[in-house]
Each structure stands twice: as C-alpha cells, then as structure tokens.
Amino acid sequence: MGEEIFKGDLFARIKTTYQSLTRSEKKVGEYILNNSREVMSMTLAELALKSEVSDATALRFSRSLGYRGWLEFKVALIRSLPAESEKSISLESQNTGVSSLFTTVIGKSKLALEETLLAFDEKVFTAAIKAIIEAERILIIGSGTSGPIAQDLYNRLFRLGLFCRVETDGLLQIMQTSIMSVKDILIVISQSGEAESILRTANIARKGEIPIITITGARLSGLAKISNHILLSVCHEPKVEVMTARIAQHAIVYALTLALAGEMGDIPELNESKIWDGFFPDTAEK
Image (cartoon, rainbow, N blue to C red):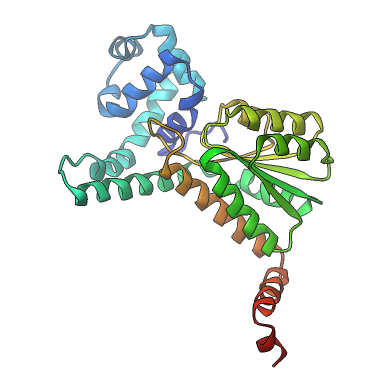
C-alpha cells in the first residue's frame, strides 16, 4: 500500500501489521483498538503510559505502521474514527444467547470484509492479474486452514483454462517450487505469513526469481517482505487462523477469478461449456 493516509485506513493497518509487531508494540496496538476515542486527545507520552510501554516504543509503533511520526498518526486516527465507531456498535452488544452469538459472528465477518476493502490497492491487484495471465505455469500453495482456500483458487483457475497446480504438503511445495522457472508464478495463501514451510518455499521462489503473489493478513510478515504482489485479507482476532480470515481470503480469491475471467474474453465461457458437456454428453450432441 502507498504512504497516503486514507480515511479508515489506520485500523486496517494495525490489524494487518499486528502479527509482525513486538510484544510491547502489540500492547500499544491493543490499547488503541480498544480505546481509540480516548487516544485521539492523548499525547504520545500519555499513550505510552496507558499502554505500559516506553515513549520510544509508542513512537516506534506508529512508524511500524508506515507513519512518519506521532502527528501523522494522530491525523490518520481522527480521520478513521467515525467509520470505525459505527462498525463497532454491533459488536459491543452484551446480550446473551444464541441470537447474540450469531449476530457477533456475522458482525465480525462483515467487519473483516469491510476492512479488507479498505486495504485494497487497485494497482497491486491489477499487477497481480497481469502476472497470472502472463505466467506459463501457476503453483498455488497454502498451509493449515488456508489450505482449503488454496484448493478453491485452484478449482476456479483451472476452469478458466489456466495451467495451474495446488499443493498443501510442505515437502511437495518445496519440491515443486524448486523446478519452477522465471516464467512461472507462485501464489501463496497464508494469513500469518510466518508458517515455516511456507517461508521456505517462498524463499526458494525468491532465489529463483519466480514472481510471488501473496494473500495474507500480515503486511510486515516474512512472507510479505519477499513477495512481489501482496493482497491483504484483514482480520484481527486473538488467533489468526479463524473463520473471519477465511472469509476475507475467499473474497479476494473470488475477486481475482472474476477479474481474470474478464481479461480472458470468451475462453472461460467456452471452458465452462466443455465441462458441462463432459457431464452430460448426450445433451451436448443434441
């Protein structure tokens, strides 16, 4: 993402940077997320005191998010507050029971999608589409609960007629990436961006100058740092491998598929017809 401060962007930045922060910096982030309106009127020293960290840590936190200083951070916070407070209302209900539980789940899912939209970078997305179309072969990898999302992307891409494979086994990911060429592309799906097998595979691709597209929730992760194109799936939960993260990832996968189909003319529709003809050959002959 660029350095321009967009309305509503600060909270998305905190959430996509959270996993890469130090323990002390995470304390600052948590305090801001939980007390954003109070922070608006605080000095840097007051925020540090409330977060139980040093002034230097509080300043380092703002710079980790891409802001040049405390003043720039405060401006971004003020501009972000109205949208964030409105989105938080439905999640603050203290009602008990199944209905409240369902409402909370839907609310968090909606919030993940809205903040993923805030983190959307059209230039990055367009460049990723171009790279996929130009690639000779595509390898899609994912681990843990990102595995099913990788499989979903594979199912969609091969139906478009793209030459691709999917792999969720760490050893096979390394083996397949090792024999890829610079004309191929690696698509990595990992919310944390820090899984050991994923990082090993991505580093092999990096050394082989193979382009890497990453769908992740951590823009400062080890994986993001070596990727060519980063598509952010925003989600802030105690555990990164949660359902709301999968929903954000799925939305990106679906958007990628639609955009690719739009760039490929009649090919996707023809391929879809061939697939259905394979299931119902008698109907096709008539």
